[in-house]
Amino acid sequence: MPETSSYILIASVDVDAQHEDLFNEIYDTEHIPHLLAVPGVLNVTRWKGQPFDLCIGGEVKPMSAPAPVYTAIYELDSPDVMHSKEWAEAVEKGRWASEVRPFTRNRVHALYKSNAPA
Image (cartoon, rainbow, N blue to C red; front, side, top):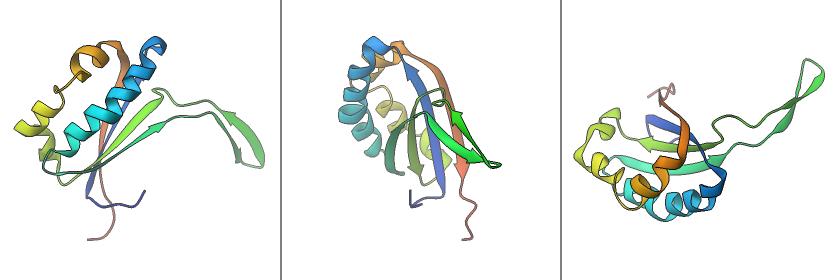
């Protein structure tokens, strides 16, 4: 993922299996577009964790899918974006708050600042 910003917010979550299709639909068609409209949100990408095999120390080791399994990476101009009125409105907009959020669990949020030289 090429860096286009100084900060990334990583939001990871699990969702109840019976709501997974709706979660993906609303995330892609509503939640991301609402957040991309927020000044200072430069890009959003979504990922789903997968099990894999990793060769380390001369041995292949099976690795489980991460938990939580779904991750979104938000590229931000500044951490202040997440305090803005526009952000507060965007995260509550559409069907996300009422039809998706209640069926999510294991939410983890982390903010990272680029360590690349300016």
